Length: 158
Image 1 (cartoon, rainbow, N blue to C red):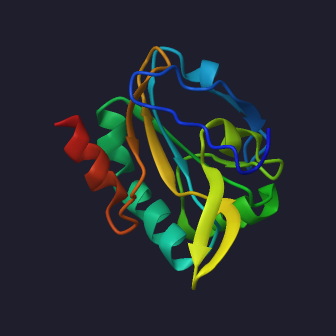
Image 2 (cartoon, rainbow, N blue to C red; image 1 turned 135 degrees about the vertical axis):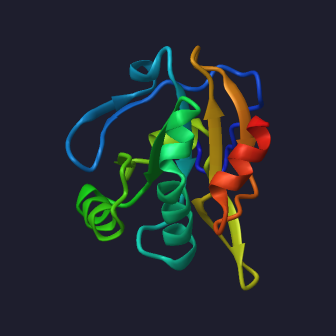
């Protein structure tokens, strides 16, 4: 698939399956969450201000989201070592998947054209997918509020 080809997933679509090792070497796959709800979030880079705020916002509301039946998985193109350091530094209770080959990012339409200071380039598009127990996409957040990502999810769940 060409980097500039965007996947247009919508609520109600079957979530693309994936299988990858997380930052601790555990195999994580969408099928492993069968019967459970999942928050799958894509973010650009470990240890950057927006990505740290987003991860910590999910961490701070982890118990509440778990009480509502959700697991959380984060994905970026950073390597496992970077994810491990990021997770340990901020006490993240959920797995982070390194996707340096960008297979998962592309399958969810989270890789594509971006603009910064008028310059266009290919990069990670910050997105959050709320997936139900049957692997269907319940909701997609394309404009993530990095200061309150859990609030956006909880607002949808009401």
